[in-house]
Image 1 (cartoon, rainbow, N blue to C red):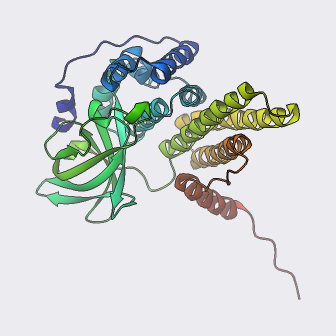
Image 2: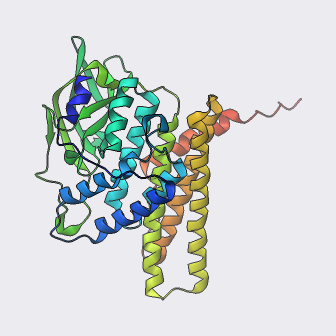
Image 3: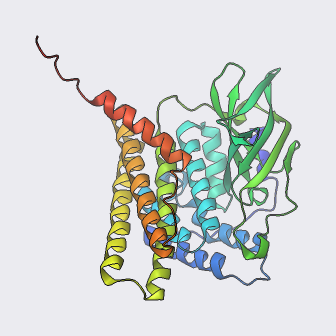
Length: 360
């Protein structure tokens, strides 16, 4: 476990213990307020240290590893509460929760024992989106090197990845097989393009640009996800829906404060957001079932429900933003939603019985 344990060779943290789902939501709201309204003199590192000590990074750790394993609906509510005040905080939390789910689903017992205990102590995981020729790509190339591998390329990662503990990178082997690579964030060959992750003029920091220059990858750092849609993919869609919903709520609060809208319009926007919330809760329950269910249908149901939640949340948030700006144009579908909708359509068509042929 050399590549994994090396990330723990850093000052140890002591995180608070969150004991209930209600407490997790309360803590998320408090931390979101600090991220949104913190002292201008406070550094990003100080805010991130406070977040680590809050205990939020451990709320989805399975009970058999000492966590409380909150429901996926609560994870979505936590991300929505964060997004309502700080998009950056929501991005950080969502990436961490999805990465932990990937480890739960695809990781070894060694991954579980090391990473889950570290998360309970405040360690953070980040995720990467591969880039090639200035465009998003599905993975970085993973080249064989003796009994190990080498990783090169570039990626856009979770904000302030340099201050996290691990980075989960999508990769593709020489044989074309997809894999996840778990890297410590401070190892040889990993280069952060910017000088810091401090926001410019207090704006939300963008994704961290990271270069991978012949990074050594041991066998125990590689995760092999299945080909079919699985729980981490559904959770990623759900938490993106939560961030859309949180952003919509933030815009809605601004509309309420302006006091210029017709009451009917306000009621309609509120109903759209409430519908998105209901869809999100339903998707969370479907993902809960998929985590313990053995049938493929559980995973399919979770994916379809999460796609529906993201579509409704995206639409609701878009309506709120357009109401705030009469000149705004409908937003394009985010790539993740477009891809999920295509897969959803394929699954729906695959499961629909063909009508009998008409006799001549």
